[in-house]
Length: 426
Image 1 (cartoon, helix red, strand yellow):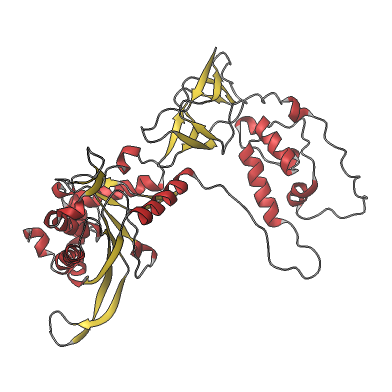
Image 2 (cartoon, one colour):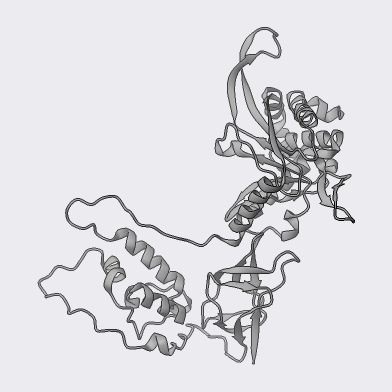
């Protein structure tokens, strides 16, 4: 009995994805609910579990784009689970084809090259008819000219998988001996298809610039008061709540206050019942936090931040950030934000103009903290070195007026420079 491996539905907006990796090689045994492949969509990377136990057969390759509902393989449930070493997959006729005659062996007196793997990558036929390898590995070795007998397998029972061949090619290419005489720097060119997530990011950023009347206003904020507050209470805060007190919770709560004062910044432009532009307002503040994930920028959303405590904000951001880097975010966790915060300062950015996250009407950009000579807030008329941060607010001028955007940014500045305002809701 065989069971089909089918691409499951991820969400209404996701219709296809790319097989980024098979977790179980061709001919290997898989347990029910064990991850059989990773599917990368334009929003998330998800693991597809095996629907049954048995031996896996691939019907699609890594890198193939497949539609939701497509059959990408099957599982032979009648195959017995190997007691020890897994049997090698039966080679396909193409893989068993007789290779072209190899070059004549070098004379016995010729010294063996020091980088044997590199030489095999360059000119050796795939060979290895008696070597345990998956059909995909054999096909890739044939294409790359790799002798399978010198490749170490990491599959069950030492079987060579396509990942082993790729790793061998990459390591061999990097260790190939240089040609005699002067050699110029590398001039290799490689072309790699954009991942679905990268394509989606690109299209959304272009969409934002083409459809919105985007404008950016700037201000600067003295971080001294927040830094002193953190220094004073960080140990007690971590001891009680089990999470560190960062800057982001202050900015999230400051944005909540600002969005409540200026609700149009927390709104969308949408098509009304008659098809004409309308304003969709929100009684809640769902703030998206831009996070650099493993495969691209993602923006998980903090729901109802108006009801969250500082500890709640910090712990939620920590959890979302960790899962973003592990590609474990759910699609639902990245949908529905009403406002976005991005912090380029963690990468060293001093100033930038963030691009809107459609359909949102504004995005706040945080930046690096640098000591600059400014007027001392405690001694008017005197100059002092203060920890300053530039803030940038990009907004859609179709719905938000400049005066409103400036006042919103000033309200954030006031709250950060005097954190007591956050506690007293002023």
